[in-house]
Length: 248
Image (cartoon, rainbow, N blue to C red; front, side):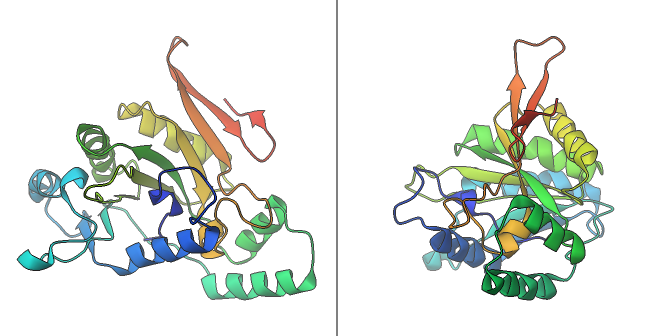
């Protein structure tokens, strides 16, 4: 699966949680063991038990050394047609280094061009939820949708005991430059009953270590989706944060 997500952190921006700190924290989550249901090879009959056993609110990020329970970086589900797409990440990072040395002005279009040149096009819709029923309920809907083949892959962060830190759920799409597919994914997420704020982040930002409060003043999320309860029929209002225009 794609790299981790800095948005595990819940709180005001800045301070100790610099871009570098967030990058290090997400890398640590990636490197710890993941709990994965792989629908490509695991019988569907085992899914409900897996979902109940590994509810995000009950799985500790740090495990329990006394009970020999390992830390858990992520809980993830791979859909029946999931095919990992990473592109040329090393080439992307080398081109990024050269770009910074050149002193060229860095914009969203610069990053997009790098991503296209190296086929690093995956991205994800993100949501942040309190621990307990809220995250468990939302995750069960998303995980079922992945099992049905509506998404290729999704993941959720485990809980941080004795902390008010929120969980993050990430639902992936194959190509952040395909706006129509990104909007379709938002509609499918809303179809599971999720009404909270969603934001969309291309993985290229994560691979390049560009988090919020970065020195290029780039916003690492490129869409924001708010569910409109007033509208009939109810739908998302999605803002393109690069152009600051409404998409839907």
